[in-house]
Image 1 (cartoon, rainbow, N blue to C red):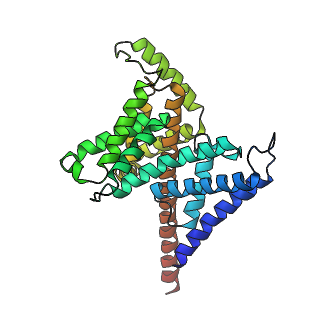
Image 2 (cartoon, rainbow, N blue to C red; image 1 turned 60 degrees about the vertical axis):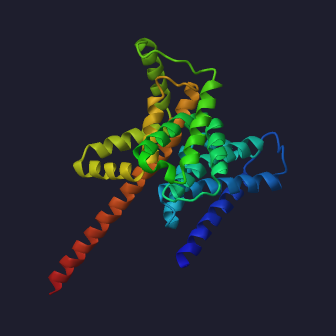
Length: 303
């Protein structure tokens, strides 16, 4: 009970800090909406985004982890600079971003349950989420289909199947209505290589992809860290597959290069958070072992 109150106070502190920041910052050109409405709404949506990201990353059990998640979200989330615009663009951007982790969290929450209520609503939610989020549409759809294939024998007995079908339908609609979509031939290696080089150079300039690359390389250099990396991949299959597929869409970018890069950065945010959490836990474990060994040495010296 005490821990629950602490977590509620932590989210309340994030809301208050965001509201105070939005209220004190200078607004060029003035407000389009009333600041008494727009500032609390933006602060509330930022708090909701932190809550959803922390739920997916499983960092919602300690106040320090939640605060770290809030910092990661504000630093690495694509379009985070728009959160401070305090106008209708900020509200729409925050609302749009919140839908994605909400959809992912609902998928992971109900994927192991079996109930028959709200199937039509979940179908519509899948279509809406995929059709309105070009950056994450294709990677998330491919990840859903891959996970569904691994559970194909019991797929229609799980509650998540309408979400997957709805997401596949929305992705199909997004591809059909995209002016960038074209069936690029695999044999056109020159065009693919040029687009890949251009996309990777743009990605390298983003801080989240830079951190994700170096953290992943750091984990692959040690056998014990590789074992922990594989554990993270198994524990977070959906996000891991999304990150892999988002990078694979760079050579083709069927919905546009900007959206493809945005999708990679979005899933890199979660990936960096997963790896950083593991590093913190490992350092805490090593510190506890060191303190325990020092305590044992001191006791043996006394006796």
